[in-house]
Length: 490
Image (tube, rainbow, N blue to C red):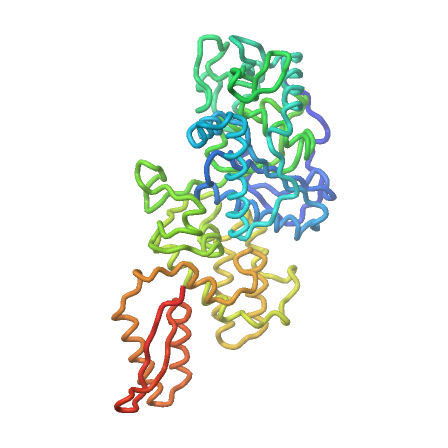
């Protein structure tokens, strides 16, 4: 069987506007040219809604939100289409539904699990400062399209029925393995696919599998069943973005098998050379130097960090989590630590304090110095270095620089005008305070008040307020001297 036909629509014909992206497909940094400057299209793999999204899941959401903002700036918001899917049919969802709702019919239990999990995901990513995608398709709404694509793959000799399943024939595509750079004879089946004797090749993967009477299923020419994981994204992306689009993104762990298999399905079904012209992948997230896992006791969801006190005895504001992610290049691994978040929170408070109130002087987006860094393969590390420089200049009283810092933080989505105390004291836990430290700061402030150095006294009060400590001044009833008490305000 020959290689898929190359269609003219895969050409990168758009104008080069300065944006460079590292393309996993070529392993090179390339000039970004859209297929159509009037309709720049990006697809990013979203969550499988069986459990709350963890902090590793947060990274692609944040990274590609920054890219979305940058594309909207370059091409105009009306000329960019961003699709992030929700996978709401999956065997992990079935298992979670049976575990959490054993007394309900399975379909009702599944609906409860997916609704609760998807709703929490939306709440979490909003707290992280992310814009909504233009489309958020759910897999269950596109099953007829999946059945149609599978039929096309069978008709074109790229898929076959065996043992109640429909499988993709990886040997039928000469270019299979082009994204992951793996040779076909080295391929192993994906984590969600068992290696069975009925497969022609070990790497062949499931497109359709039969469902029991108790399992969710849809009618098809091959029996009542449900789709495999990979076919879902091929169909949803084609529905909203066309056979070939500009950018496909996701985590490094999706290169193989998921993205490799998406390419195989899409190219062979549509007769195209590629599925997307640029493939971008973000690096992994470690926690305190170790791979995140429940067995290590270092598995944290976005919800944990935002709303509970399980990580560092604090709840952390979404802007702090977002900035912590952006301080590392998106392609590099991140070591997620409590110390990192404490440092980031302090930095963010400082930036807000020196830029707040400068809104009326804010520059146009096109004049922001961070843009040059972002055009260079989303170099957020360099962009944040620019923010440090702006903050240093703003402290000297330069209103224009403070305004640029203001606008830059808003562009990156790490601030939207809130008082710094809202961010800094967001997750304060009483037990985290050192009582001796607070008492020493109060004594220091009293000395400044005696010396009539009110500016320094106010500075200490403001610092403690930002930490969630409220001071109350009064007089000693016996001596008449000033005394200060304090309490925690949650």
